[in-house]
Image (cartoon, rainbow, N blue to C red; front, side):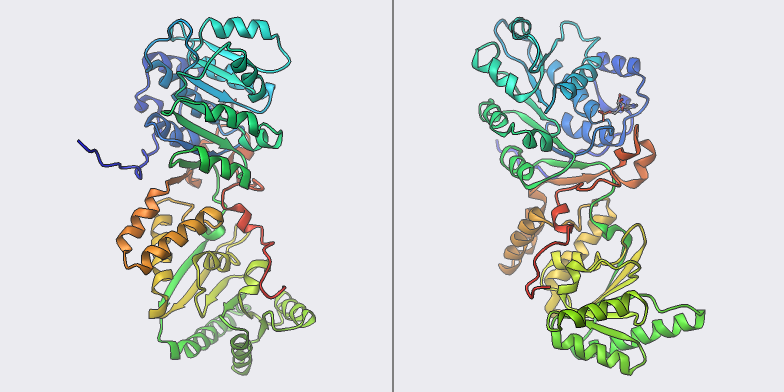
Amino acid sequence: MEVPENEAEAPSAIESFEDMNLSKDIMMDIRHREYDKPSPIQAQAIPVILSGRDVLGCAETGSGKTAAFSIPMVQHCLNQPPLRQGDGPFAIVMAPTRELAQQIEAEGKTFSRSSKGFRTAIIVGGTNMYEQRSMLRGGVQIIVATPGRLLDHLQQGNTNLARVSFVVLDEADRMLDMGFEPQIREVLMNLPKRHQTLLFSATMPSEVEALASEYLNKPVKVKVGQTSAPTANVSQHLEKVVDGEKVNRLVAMLIGEKNEATKLGSDMPMTVVFVERKNRADEIAELLNAEGVPAAALHGGRSQAEREAALQDYKEGRCSVLVATDVAARGLDVKGVAHVVNMDLPRNFEDYVHRIGRTGRAGMSGRSTSFYTDRDSFIVAQIKRALMELEAGNAFAFATGKEARAKEREEAKAWREGRQHQAAVLETDSGVTIAVEDKFKHMMVSAPAAAGSAAPTAGVADAAWSDDDEDEDGW
Ligand code: AMP
């Protein structure tokens, strides 16, 4: 019998420990620990981990992530046939430092204190190898280790990986920074085929992404805090127009906004209009000025001094509209942009996300208006679907970066081949993303940093937001 794989669905969040179907012993330990309700990452990650899926977690210390993986890890171990003489552990946690390993061990142990015969070994450098060896040889369900020392014990035959079916890489970014990659890979390469892998990292540099894509199987992504994509604050509108009417529609819209503002005695909202070509930017800016809407053009065809002057006029309010090519999309960081207009939609979705990200910055709300014609049907479908996903709670819907680009290429290919249905499947096939929504923030258990709101490099897509990309025309 063939059972169809349904990899796409990830279990929903469960907001009480009682509903998680945990063993009585673990429930007793949770009560003893006085955790009343799961923290956001626990509510999201525990059901996913219990379902057996791999997890890529973007979370910082303080979010409650240790319990988020320790509770299902203990449950996983309790579900295994008992340890026999000479068996190695069921679960391994690798962490960068001795201190972190100790914290994990301490937290993990609290969830197995009621489970008879359950042992956790801590295997870190700087402590007695002999004691560690006898502990390992006596048989343990869980090892919490720094990678180097774990490998020493494996090489000496003090333990083995034959029964490992649950692996956690905690603070993966730090482990790689500290040069543990070879040891981690050595362990991962020698695991039994069937196992579950969880990778947690506060940041997602490309090395961590590479490790994750190599060793995680269709992971569910769990992220605590705000999404890295600022588009959540942007209300996006799509407007179908006929090509020949775009200019009139734009001019009418902007004149309308200017008149509205004048009526209210305020300035016209700061607007960026994106167009496809440099000469079009000049034409539109000229036309707007002629119609009494002060505008400046910003594109790679202008000299450095001209561009700086245009930007200065815009920033200082001498003109309210900046008509720009994509050159400006990446580098432009002007406070107070209220409206982004895509007079011409860009060719790819990632550029769209960058463009609309010029507004809705720094916690402010913004809006975007995109004109489209029949020629834009592919990107319009992508935008509509991402909007639907965003509504459904997928804060990564407007993600950018390597993964998003790869997904987009796959979809574009499927689209070209006229297999739109498959495009949807491809999308779900690459994994599911869960972000802890802002509405759960009050549940954060610890330091404000846990909310991740100020995390400098919080997500997979973050590199793409650094705005330091090279522009094709040397901006
Ligand atoms: P961690 O991010 O794992 O370092 O955890 C941060 C702190 O939150 C630790 O002191 C935990 O003991 C505590 N903690 C974790 N989960 C919960 C919870 N569900 N309720 C209350 N405190 C928690």
